[in-house]
Amino acid sequence: MNVGMLWLDDDKQRPLEEKVSRAADYYQEKYGRLPELCLVNPKMLAEEKKVGRVRVQPKNTVLLHHFWLGMNM
Image (cartoon, rainbow, N blue to C red; front, side, top):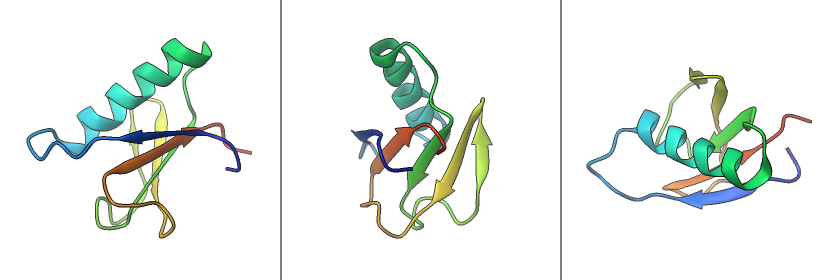
């Protein structure tokens, strides 16, 4: 993914799934479509998983508590 939206959520009370869902909802509201992919720091997620229709992948280049959402290209 080369282009996307960066989202910060460092709320320790919220589970990862809720954070991804909130970020994806905002992305859809802003851009008119649901993101396909969300990249997160490996300390937040060890291996790929799906949250709703969004594929969540760990990526070393993403800062902790940040979510990089966009379309898979």
